[in-house]
Image 1 (cartoon, rainbow, N blue to C red):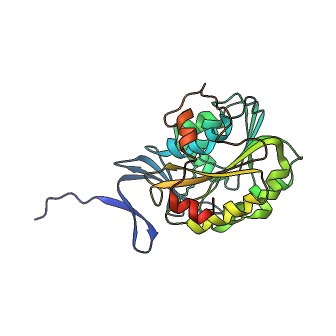
Image 2: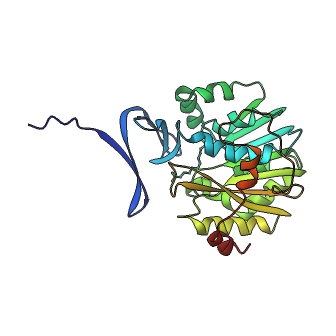
Length: 279
Ligand code: AG3
């Protein structure tokens, strides 16, 4: 007789031949919204995990790196980030980081209100971030929301999207960045997640090229992400006013990953990436 306990495992394929797997203690939530399947797992190694359509969006153990690095390289350069817009980010992780800054108003627009609701139920930070008086939530498609805003409204815009499939595809297009540029203040900053430099180099290249034609300063940067494909993740920084490698950066806020030296180091690129992007 086999006395070994049977365990449950989750797996995400990163290519048809490799991926991530981890042990699951239990399924906390499983449901289908109008846009996607939403699952929250309790894992043995990574704490609670949010899956959208079977892909890891965050784990409690390592989400701080991704969220801090989407937000702080932009917001730490701004002394008075009056109005900030987050596109996507219904789990509230990026919102929590933005609220550490002296912002007057944060608008968050996510297409899927169910992600916001489920995240508030299972992730403690989401509850407090979404109930902060500075936060306004819009359950709407990011593209139509941006099209409806007044010019020069935001000091910072952060795109916290899923992989570029389904409705998120539009959030990687040049026409979307043009629309973003017009609602960004002239001295504003845009950052966006731009996938794995190891597995999705073509996405990074395309997105970088699209932004290059629109903003004075466009710089890729990166951070380790243990539970995302490739183990490290790329972001893009775009601004007409700020060069992220030269501008002074504030450090008067709490962080677990970010600091001013990380801000500088994140923009240092390995040779293969410089070559691929032609920088
Ligand atoms: N957004 C980027 C996650 C993409 C991960 N992709 C994957 N597992 N295939 C994360 C949203 C967190 N706020």
